[in-house]
Length: 342
Ligand SMILES: Nc1ncnc2c1ncn2[C@@H]1O[C@H](COP(=O)(O)OP(=O)(O)OP(=O)(O)O)[C@@H](O)[C@H]1O
Ligand SMILES: [Mg+2]
Image 1 (tube, rainbow, N blue to C red):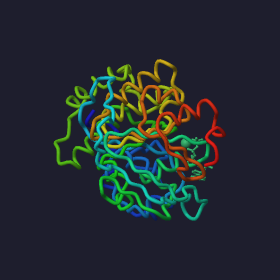
Image 2: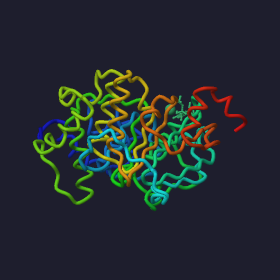
Image 3: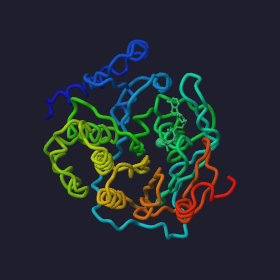
Image 4: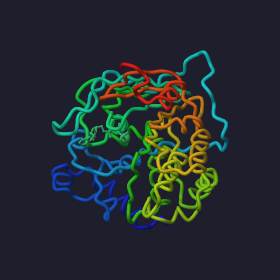
């Protein structure tokens, strides 16, 4: 496995991603990590794999398909008992976003129009909102997706200016995004992808990389936790997966790469009833007093399993209302109209 095409491609990628945007991106070059896929830097840096081009260059990259951000390496806790934020002491601030404005890259339409949110350790936040209100854009802007330019406001993650960090640095810092529409990556096996991402994070932390056997031993319990068949590991990333399988695979990445802040964009879409419960239990099993989850969802049913401390309603690129878990129930019963003027 160590000499697989993907592993080789990864080392090539590490050596070549420092080449200029001119040569790599404006010519619409394919990413050397994934030669069979029309992926760019941003596609692979979300795996935490190092890539040398500047953030500015990244933000100019054109259309793209993307991976979420792997994070760190601790074993997942296999329990459905999630910690609850019953402490009266608020946890440390993980993410603080103030007045965030963002537009589609290169002078496109403004999507985020002054968004504020603060997420502390131990908390679960849910963002709900009508289609097109900007929820996915928010999640992608936070991880440094090149389709968007930040035009105003600030975001601090663990006290650091998030927008000063490269996408892979955000990943190494512990930010994870599970995309609403996970992409397929032909030619890269799930195991190789997960191990490379996992090792990239370990490398950033100054830890010894895991060899394929060590990684397999690390990975196997996580498959059990998610009730995923081991055959998924040898398949290419998301290739031919059903919608629900892709979502499980997203959570497998989260389980392997444990995040301090996991942003889960519609992780419930496409899941059958049993899969929804499995995935929710897996997410709950990963919760700790020092990490947090930001769920983006349209439906209360996910929140029956993963209880939010805060529910935010997003509209036209801003959070216009915040409440407790009852807000989602109100929404479920009466729709957005029932919430009154926002
Ligand atoms: N790269 C882009 N280019 C052009 N328009 C975009 C781009 N990304 C987002 N938009 C537009 O911005 C608006 C917000 O999109 P976004 O995907 O963030 O919405 P959402 O709240 O996640 O919606 P949904 O609930 O349907 O997933 C939409 O009108 C969308 O068409
Ligand atoms: Mg969306």
